[in-house]
Image (cartoon, rainbow, N blue to C red; front, side):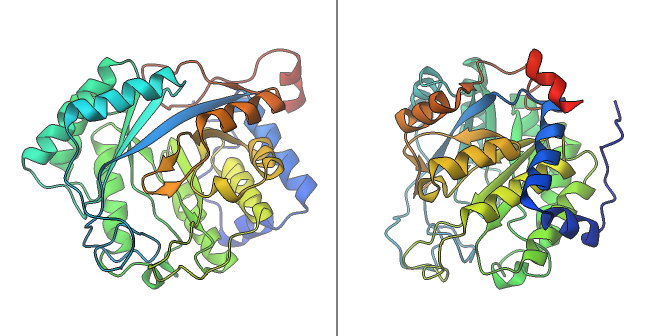
Length: 340
């Protein structure tokens, strides 16, 4: 059902004014909308596993898995299906309700490896978990195969705004990314798409990315916001870490633009203070990736995440609907009235 705050026509200037608003005003607006559509005390725990690591032919400047850069990441074959499902069971035991599988491919090929990924998706769904994949570019037919296997969501990030994109990636175009998102949507799989800040872009480039995302109809059900993790050997290795408050502003702006979406606080959390992470939750983030690694970069472990949530009086989401990340449960109880 349409609600007045659901828009797809935000202008660049409107989004920039929102992003640059005084911090208390921005957070109040974001938190107020967050409470309308989500439970502000609940956070979904997700686990991301690299099922095929390294050797990617793409030239994404941030990525240690690119074959073009000399990093410590070694190319490995696709994992065995049972090994992936063991990891999924362990993730579920640790509280994750969503299991994401990433392969360092430029695009999906119709071969035995893709057949095995289909089996992995079916196996994860049989565990009563949400299943997400990020495998590179997809055709409409491949997206439909994943949908038929029960895939909940497909991640394909825009990474940055269209004006800055060719400073980060030249091996595929922005339109290639949008075409994959259209194929995913056409197959009835929910869309997971966001980006990375701290890659040397201007604030207007961040605004440009958010403008493209909010223009998608419907909005992506899932919007991951990442902070660059500089990795030795990549072109962005010497960039400074992003300021935590810049990440909070991005989360809050995404929450206002896409009120029903699940905003996922993703890479870069190891260098965020507990206070900065708490502000991200206040700004509307309602999902984190837990576990020691996000693909090949460090991530806080389960114990650290549970300690943080406990200190904040927040709880991991126990389960999600069979439909996937349509939206997380809305607030209930006495605090819900604040949103009015």
